[in-house]
Structures are given as structure tokens and as C-alpha cells.
Image (tube, rainbow, N blue to C red; front, side, top):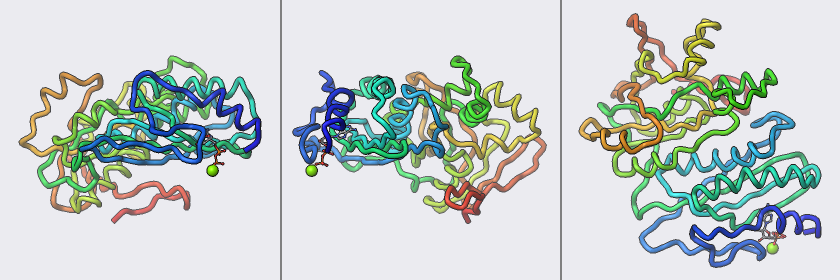
Length: 323
Ligand code: ADP
Ligand code: MG
């Protein structure tokens, strides 16, 4: 490691919070060493954001710092884990201190909200790419997975769907209106950590919506060996998304757009969510039911049924059938 890389780590990425679970050995040695508390299990996930693929060139560094952590936190939310530690691998084309200062501000503001400690990482030179490995804790033996949905279970989503997809369209059209609800949803997602933790022991399956409702709900269906019918009328959509759908006459649009980072989960019929609903900062909406018959069916108001068994394949740039 060169002295300039060392000064970057020292200046921008070495922080200790008063809260949180400190590592036994943190930044500065060859490895971090972490104590997993008794009675807990470690949940680990990694996500990369690549310039030109996952974010537009010249994106705001502060929002990027927030987003790279948010998308990783969202994976922890989907299993019901509480965030504890993270490691950050960053590849930078140049050492731009203004950029790094804003990036680390966005990153640590969100980290602090969850008392998450950055315990290590890697700093290299090359095309801009950011990878976070996140670690969270679960009570021993408890977790949400994609595999537990059973016929009769209700399907829920948090907040709304399609909003971030609309934000992406706006970002591509060079919209910089920082109060635009859709643009904010795309640039600065809110991981549903609190909801995920509260669903432990209640939900039969859970996933975070990163690739679109149709693709991600299909992952639950496939892992659980079941099918589902979603009632189109019940989808929680913002006014802006409704308007966009009406303009393009594309009512299937919110099923295929990604980046929402909301949770989609299933709950057995005998589980009452009323108490949970009152405690949450965001809404949850029932959108459909799990059925024995495989496949994802969308039921419209006029009784029409559309089968949506496709998801986007990033490598082949095309829609692939799941089943
Ligand atoms: P090594 O060469 O042994 O892999 P490095 O010289 O790459 O170690 O890193 C030195 C220390 O700084 C390590 O503890 C590493 O985890 C940490 N580190 C490197 N880059 C980052 C980063 N971007 N954020 C946080 N910690 C980092
Ligand atoms: Mg080493």
C-alpha cells in the first residue's frame, strides 16, 4: 500500500463511534477480528456499485456513499438481521479529497444511524467501483429466508413500488430536482432494517426488492415451491408513478422496475400484523396471496389475468423466464 492510500484510509475511513459493537481488532492490521456475541449468528452479504452500471457517471458522492451502504443494509433487512460491521473496498480513478470527503460523509451518516462500525476494506486505483461487505447479527436459529412461503399466506410490500424506477428515468433525463420524491427514492434509498427485525418470527418468507417486484417475488415463489396471485388494484403506487403508467399506457411497468429496496414478504393467515403496523415508520400493504399453483399471476380489476414469470438477466441484457 502506498502512503497516499494510507492517508486516504486514515483521513476518510477510520472512525470510531461511541455506540456499536467495537471490533476486537479494527482498521490498520491485516484482518479485522470480530467477536460474535453468544446466542447470535452472523449474517453476511456483499454488493458492488459500478460506475456506468449501477450509477450514472458523475453521480453525487455523498448520495453514493449513502446508497452503497443502503443497498447492503437492505440485504440484512431481508433476513431480519441487525447491522453491526462493514468492510469497504473502493477503487478510485484519482485521489480527489473533496469527492472522498463527501462520499465518506454520506456513508458514515447512514452508518451512525445503525451504530455500524467500518472494520476494514481495500483501497485501489482504477475505474470507480465500490463494494461493501456487510455483517449483521441474528438471534441463534432465527432468520427470514426466501423459502418459507406456503399456500394461503398473504403477500405484503413495504411503502410503494416503482418509485425508484421512475427516479432512474428522471436521473437519466438529467433531472437534479433534489426534492423530487421519485429521484430521492432512486438516489437515496431507505433500507427497511426496522421492519426486517420486527418480521423475525412473524413472516414466512422475505426478500428485498432490488430487481423489481416481479423478479424478486418470483425468487420467493421458486425458493418456496409455490405460486401467487397479485391483485393489481392493491399495488401501493405514488401519484407520480400512476401518472407515468397512464402516460406510457404501460400498467405492468411497476412490476419490472428495480432499485426500490422495499421488502416483499409473506405472512401466514393466523399472524396478526395490526400491532406491527402501528409501530412502523413506513406503511405495509397486502398485495396478494400465495397459492399452490406455480407461477406469478397478476389479476386486474376487469378480471383479466396476466402471467409474469420473467426477470431481467443483467449478463444477457434480456428478460428470462423463471419457470
Ligand atoms: P493488506 O495489504 O494487508 O491487505 P491494506 O494495506 O490494503 O492491507 O489495508 C490496511 C488496513 O486498512 C487494513 O486494515 C484494511 O482493512 C484497511 N482498509 C483499506 N482500505 C480501506 C477502506 N477503503 N475502508 C476501510 N478500511 C480500509
Ligand atoms: Mg496484509
